[in-house]
Image (cartoon, rainbow, N blue to C red; front, side):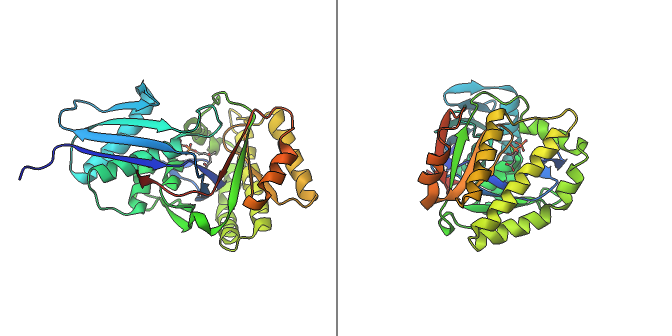
Length: 327
Ligand code: DP6
């Protein structure tokens, strides 16, 4: 019997919203974060990636939504593939084609779902029998937050201090809690400073040391709030964590201001809604768009309360979702 020479697989993964944020690395190359983080995968939004390894290929190639990609994007894909090929002992080049079912201007970063789907597809194509944690480590090499899109539902990324010890795993499945994320899109333009550059500036803020030192406490509170489905605790801790990250961003050198007047208007409105007794929380990543977290039963009420605010271009509705999987 001759050995197989071509290997292919197709996988999909969703983006995630961080409840406790990753901001800053101790090792940029390995994407070892300065603090652990916690997130929820977003159902219905997905990157689907097909990979084929073949001895016929003379280089790696990448296509996203039908467009050939070179440069930095291809470089990050190669980093992940090199680690997987080395582990599998199969030195074959690959053809990768990837599609997002959400528009690139929707204010949701596609790097988390993209690198989670890539790592999952590649490992399965090469027939490797490895754990979810191992796959999340491969995904991390392409984008830190991608490590959290590999496991199911509510996910914790343990910061660790080496490639081996920095991985994500599920703390509860997607069905554990009916949480929804309504993404209020106020800008569909590309952000001025991407996360990879932003992480490098984090240490220049005098506030980063305090943010990082307090992270284990926030993770503990957030983990417990999720496990006990305590929305009040969840609200307090995720808003604090998001505000702390943005305080670091705003006080970095050079400063990163991701908020716009629309962002601030939404924050103010959410705080007013909370005072009126509506259980809704805000959290904001490296951009101006605001994620409103609420329980599924309150989604209509939340949307009704905010949809007429000035400057909202689009509202995306998602809920807790699964991890990376084969299609
Ligand atoms: C603000 O994972 O996008 O969304 O590792 O350079 O790809 P790279 O950065 P990325 O950073 C995410 C930053 C964040 C917070 C978070 O998702 O934890």
